[in-house]
Length: 257
Ligand SMILES: [Zn+2]
Image 1 (tube, rainbow, N blue to C red):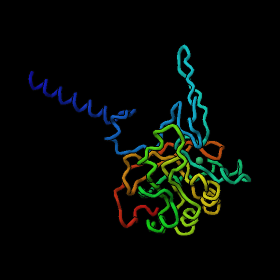
Image 2: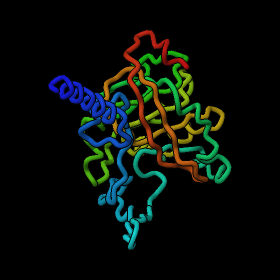
Image 3: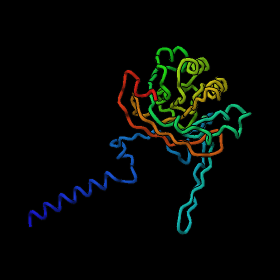
Image 4: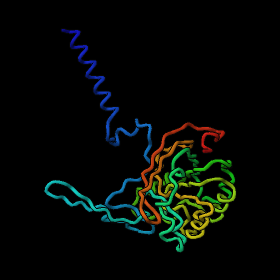
């Protein structure tokens, strides 16, 4: 009898462990044990928004029916974590080069995360010091924006870290980067929004900026990234973005894909 009880207990433990490991849903307390890191911001009813002191509001409107709950979502395409396309800045490309045209292989694969904790801007000088080798196609910049927890405050912070025009030009001329990510609402400094977007989004180069990544707790290094934007005919779209650590590789060989 005792043997049967022990055997039953073991089966119960194994079954419980299997169910937990195979869970369909995750909750915040589980995430620390998950090898996949989600680096998107959660869409909420009130969120920080570019140039707005009070953020964007009434994004999710729940309608509670007799049987189901059905929400309507109303928001700008550049809210939260999202990709930009050339039609964002080149008006003649409106409707021609949209999120629907992005080659998904650009958004999926090895990525290098570099940390520049003290820089107010990503300039040519900063990029020179990073020495990002040719062959690296995807780079994410973890800046002081994350340390300052800018996305935890509703009011827009105009003094955020992002690219200057000379930084963008250097990146285009001296690297093979096709995908560039940043940890606040714009890839460009506020006072250089147009030139930076024009340089990076030039169709000949085809760089895709990914803005507003959630990088808390993310260490510099190499990762395998999956970034899938909503397939909509617009100049930008929200993305769900996750990655797995690959381990730091000082030769960068594993991320030149
Ligand atoms: Zn944008």
